[in-house]
Length: 232
Ligand code: DX5
Ligand code: ZN
Image (cartoon, rainbow, N blue to C red):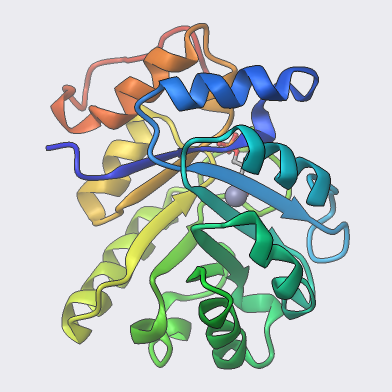
């Protein structure tokens, strides 16, 4: 059963060879292309902006999964419309009027997702869950790739899955940060639907094969030490 989705994060790609790396993802078993937008205010880092979104739109054949780590995301939603983004994630922690932002995303023709930082409990989504196409749980503090997976995230996924089932909602659960085949397997067993992976894919010796392994996680022995060529 490979029903889960894999979304490689472009943040870990070679920015001198973006077209090449996006085309590699096109050829891979990946389902989506994950794009991280940072503002240096909500998170202590800067990353991609409109020019890189444009490159991704031009070369990617995979649906775009855009993760906004910016304050006042509502200001930029109209300008994002033209990139034909599949799913747009905004952080719960940045939206005073979250319900309104979610409607704004949907009205702009995108699927709406809300992201929670590691310290934000899943119960915060209780009264918005049914409006969400996806919820994104951060399994590292947002802002940087290559960080250590926060193990508590597995229990958060299980709690959120229980809430989704209880409400009979169709919300997908995406998890982002520190994902390898080992942490990914734990997350899928807990109820995750989409795994984002940056360093694990792009720093591996064979990114295509690594994406394939992430896609086939459920067929792998959980105890086998896969991808020995990458240690976190
Ligand atoms: C971090 C970003 C992630 C990042 C994940 O703030 O949201 O998408 O690229 O990188 P890894 O997989 O290396 O933890
Ligand atoms: Zn991300």
